[in-house]
Length: 192
Image (tube, rainbow, N blue to C red; front, side, top):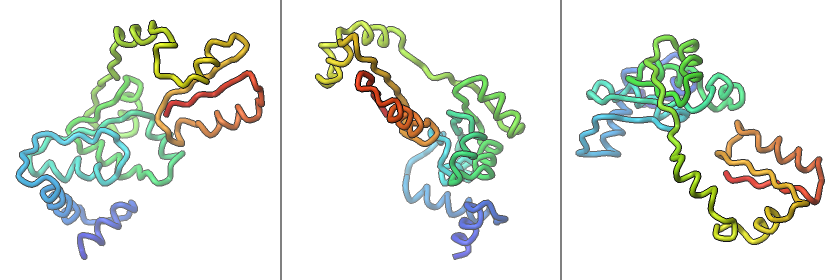
């Protein structure tokens, strides 16, 4: 009950005792991964506050921890009130590695959390594979026939957006803009 109370306080960014929280998280980790010798814990999405706690709770077991930063978190916190900056920033302070996907994010994290041990790991793109796919004739792809027809029609304009389906990407604004456009010769394709 005491651990639950402390965790609830912490997850709501209120003063809490961290020792019982860490103890509870380590016990839960052992429950989820029994008999597994973990050397490195990686919080890849970088958002979830429960996994963020593991970045510091597991260190007592000798586990190296990393947390990824894929976007400007300061802006994310403004857009999504469910995210908790104190918890994420503490994970940045305590993790062994704060892995940013661009140099500009490293600079931003260093401003927000100077103690963070930042590094850059840019998103890898297989240029050869992308070129091969780009050179594939449209009729040999798995695209729906209606979309193929739209791509081949010179009087039709197709806008294509690719990304994760989240509020931060602004797809709601994009869809509203296309609704206002109301042009029968324009298509919006979302790959989310």
